[in-house]
Image: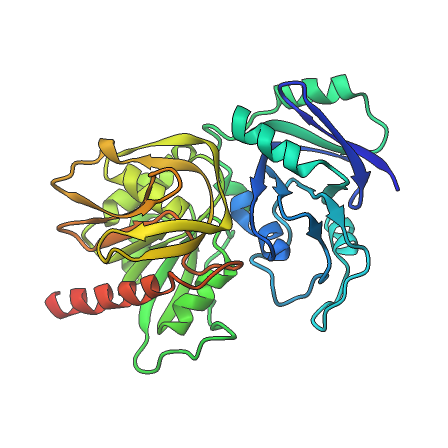
Length: 372
């Protein structure tokens, strides 16, 4: 097998073996604590610009298939695992992980000490890195990592959003769609996951997906019952053009945001965001619903967070808190129909504890329709 290495901007080098494309890629290195769901993680557009390390030691054992995609192709810049399983065994398998990564030009390394790497990231923070398969000079790779742009201030949304408007009609395979007259929802695509769209349809929505740069006037011309703000990659402050349009939509229609959509809604309400030390990435994060006292195990994938001190408590109510570090995981506006969460209620991968939030969106839409 071809040798490879992961070079961090602070000079730390991790050596391993290639099981993906032979080449070089750069991005911010982060770790994900999910035990399964690597294909959904690979294809999540929120990981665009990042090199993902899996903390679970054995990856590839159930292969890949065409049903577990969260976008049309892998979005990660690189992939790092402890042990790669070359012989997948699963009735749904259609292609090995190695062949899938090579086919999609993703650099991937195995035999990396992922426990040491994860500990290093936790202590030093997520940092710029270069992943390389083949014969390369480590010092040059470190210099390349140091010269790479990172995530702060960058607009990565423009690289993953749809180029045109389209309708989404497929529901979740495991959830019976709601019956009755559907709600018309326009969904901003900042890097939207397929499973979010599946859930919206399953909860009774007729969904039209629009590019991230779509103007508020175009949205309102569709006369939707509700507006959805999707997840996506990178720094929310790099997408201020979307913030300006969201601000024009506040109070005009019910709004629901997830992940990056949560952060963009906060910015539209004149709040602030900041970068987390190493982010939240995984399918086992405990979140407390402050309105009910219940604790949900959630799927998360973000490197930035909303500063709730920047939002007035007279207008905004915090609804969800992360029990690992007490960061804000959700809020709602007290006088206009708008709410959001930082985590992923659609899972993909992960638990389904939080899927009720799609039902809350439907209830908000119905309540708004009765008064307008």
